[in-house]
Image 1 (tube, rainbow, N blue to C red):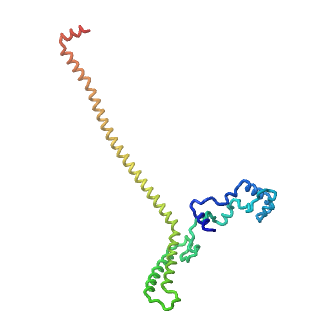
Image 2 (image 1 turned 90 degrees about the horizontal axis):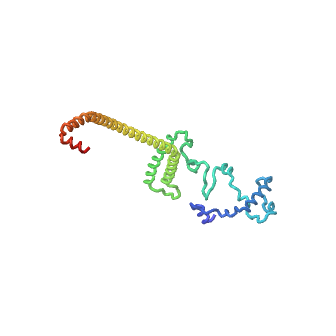
Image 3 (image 1 turned 30 degrees about the vertical axis):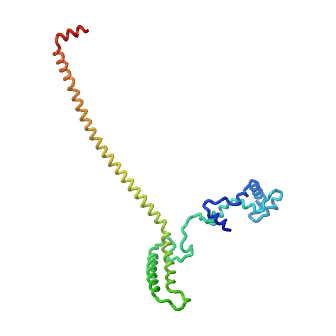
Amino acid sequence: MDDDQEAELRNPFPSPPSHYTNYTSHNLKLLSLLRERTAELGDGPVNQHGILSDQPDVPDWPLTDLEKPRVDWIQDEGHYNVFGDTWFLKETIPSLAEMGGHQLYPEDLAVDRRPALLSILRSMLVTYSALLGSLLAPPTLDAAAQPQWQREVEWITVLAQNIMAAANDLRPVQARASLELMMRRQLELRREETKAIHDKCDSLETQLAELRKVTQKAEASASMTKNEAPSMQGVEQANKFTVLSKDDLLRWAEEI
């Protein structure tokens, strides 16, 4: 594969594959005819030019390239390739041993890893102390011998890889715990908001009750005022009739 094809595979928006032009109606018809004539031959290699000798324009490349991907093969292999990348059907976190590293803790998640991780941490502290001591030691005269500090650095690298790999294995547990904590916090916030709404409703009900009492008192006072109003009007009318003079009555009679 040349550099241009490799760059095209890594492109986030790659162009269609170059063989998409082979999917013509004529070629698909030839593929269907080839399937019918080779149904009894099995999956072995076939001579498509000899089988399709009565058909025109038989391509030089194998017509079987137009076949759809075999899903059963992908399921058996457990992965497939798309644009140069390998994708697994079941996403799993590979262990340190599967990646070719030196794993110092148990691979089974059901086994408690804390003792092994504590031993790795103690070993890292001891190795780091030994590394400081080897750096202070004078260099050896044998140039071919591996220096002590280099062995200490390699061992610290192995220990650090084990700690990082063990932490990566705990990511699903951490994600589950974080999700549980977030859901509990959301539930607490909803309870607090509900309690605040209930308190506000209680406060509004108290205010409405006080306003209802004030309104009832005002209505009672207004009804008492209305009951006293007719008697006062009668007195005023009586006073008006008593103050009328004889001339006023004669003038009123003439107007009528």
